[in-house]
Image (tube, rainbow, N blue to C red):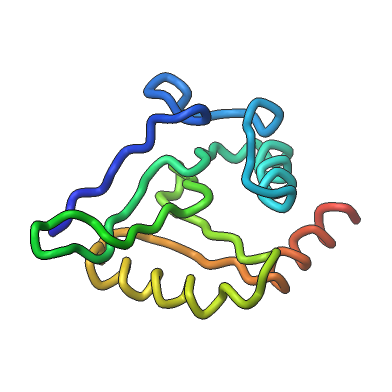
Amino acid sequence: MPTVIDNINKNNTPVSNIINADEIIFANESEKEFAKILDFYKINWQYEPKTFPLEFDNDGIPTLSFTPDFYLPDIDLFIELTTLNQNLVTKKNKKIRKLRELYPYVNIKLFYKKDYDNLLFKFVK
């Protein structure tokens, strides 16, 4: 089974296990808004804490990897958002299928644009 990579970067360090949305540089605004919703409901989360190698060359070097947007440690769930470019949905679905094949113990949920919009609608009510 391939090794999962811990991400140590500007957003994640070994001591920043649980973080606040205002302290993170997100890839896009929808990720920031999602993090604020998690903060509002006091849901513990991590931003891009793990990278999962999915495909490898002949020497075993990863050639394709996947880094889910969020991890909710209290419920052991990774979340990937697909809110900006729906053309990427097929590509992300393929990566998630591959992730599930290689790492069957990993729980992951893909939030489509409609899921995200419904969540925002409930949050701002």
